[in-house]
Length: 301
Image (cartoon, rainbow, N blue to C red; front, top):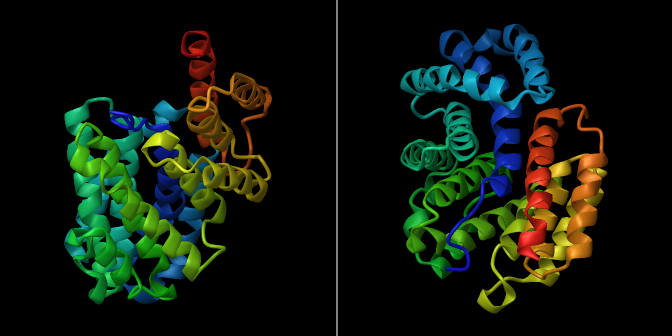
């Protein structure tokens, strides 16, 4: 099957970004919200901001992996205390999805964790826009039509919903019925762009590049559109996010058997300084992927 395996890297950049950047702030604030809403901003933002920076600038991914389960359990407790709170549900969806998609090697466990993440993502969308609740069960054309009910105020929840769904698809990549839902995820990201073109712009362009090139042209891949998305993602990110070039090489260059482009992109990744404010963790993972791809290039090409 041409896209029977959806590797981790097309998901980890956006998912980890969302889970780390928003989770640490939201979870801290949400716990305080339950206890005393008036104290959220003043008491929670400093600690959360410091935790954000520490993790985003971490160059040891196993350290992040080993520490995440404690936060998963903490988020479950927050959901118990605030079962209809959009922020809490979104934070839970993002971290469960990120952890299951990136740091779990056992397929059965990854499926379990991302299923929980998807459920939280759906609940977050329902909390944000009741009229959109249940749209995930609709056929594609009806799904797209009902996406119009989601407005600009619901963009964060819609984005989280799409990413948690994609993480679930990745974990169920041996199931054709799960892979068949990729166009719905693509429609979600496009709707986010329509509602707010600046919201997570580089991430969405990167992700749309992957979604357009994860299948060969003969099976529905749109490589012209994918190329434009990759180039836009690199432009918006000022090429500081090394994972964009890795996926550009993996899905675009490899599928088109463009060895020159493939090697150039990956060599640029390895030559780059991974320590970039807010991107060190992602860039460290990207350089590991680049080494693996270059190492297998002779066999592939």
